Image (cartoon, rainbow, N blue to C red):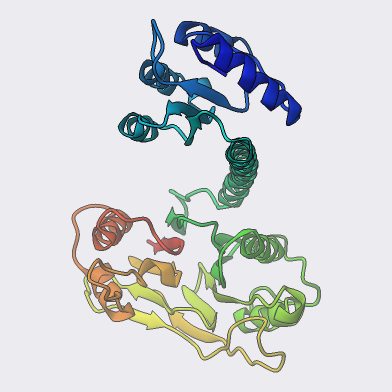
Amino acid sequence: MVDDDEGNRTMLARRLARLGHDVVTASDGNEALARLRQQPFDLLLLDIQMPGLNGYQVLDAMKQEPALAQVPVVVLSASDETSRVARCIEMGAEDYLSKPFDPVLLKARIGACLEKKQLRERERKAFAALQQSQKALSDELADAAAYVRSLLPQPLEDGPVRATWRFLPSTQLGGDAFGYHWLDERRFAVYVLDVCGHGVGAALLSVSVLNALRSRSVPNVDFTDPGAVLSALNQVFPMERQNNMFFTIWYGVLDKETRELKFACGGHPPAVVLEEGSLDPRELRTPGAIVGGFPEANYPTGRCLLPPGSALYVFSDGVYELARADGTTVQAAEFVAELARPCSGPRLDAVMTWARGVRAGAGFEDDVSILELQVP
């Protein structure tokens, strides 16, 4: 409590003590600031008219120091100082008390200020705890995203099959995963899958499926038969045992000697073949439901030949289901036409540049995954 009148200080200090408060007094603004900096206080009762630093100057000084700016201030004023009180309220004071002090009003206004301060402190603690929790979650999601990315295959720059890819993660942890590997000396498997939704659950399911394909850990399955692979995955990963999550997948197996590509779709966008010297894209699709959704689903295997110089593109729907600034969404046919457009550099780089242009600087709402396989 700050007042240059010793009688006011003594009287008010006694009343506050009888109300159960611990009171520290100061006779002017400089002494008040010194005491405020020495120890924490719950409330400051501040006279306006004082020699040296007056109430306005004390309020201004407190506003400049973060530790003091949080201390609520109740102005002590004479009954004819309404304009001065208003100025103090504009400068950040919480309330005012008129001299001489009414005991009932004194108790009510000080009690109200202390309750508001306690509420603000609880809110600050809750907000700090929320920030800490969000940071921990964000760090965990970043670690999960880094782990998923670490499982993606290395590009193949030489050999009978050359493979590369581009991956742009969404603003949330997504469920895209893809890979390729040799099944034996002549047959090469390639696949892209997309788990519904976002978050850790989607990422965990995508990693589980990816590991099952890479390690060929599903028993009694011919991994050179795409339809059999999807049928097996449909039985191993039913959505009722995966927190109601399902996934789509395109799975293909290329025989390097015969150049035959066998493939199957499970609710996934078709792959696209671009043949050397032709600008007419060929889509590779088979009928097939989402994986995990229907136990009785059937997944037939399709076949085609890849002529020398062909390029196969396998992707998730995030590469073309892009929302423009005007609210419209890119359609699959538009993307396929863009994919087949002549370009001077790497085709995947051109596709990524196009996708970023569609989003006009905004982040991607879904993972963007696309693989390119070239068969010399």
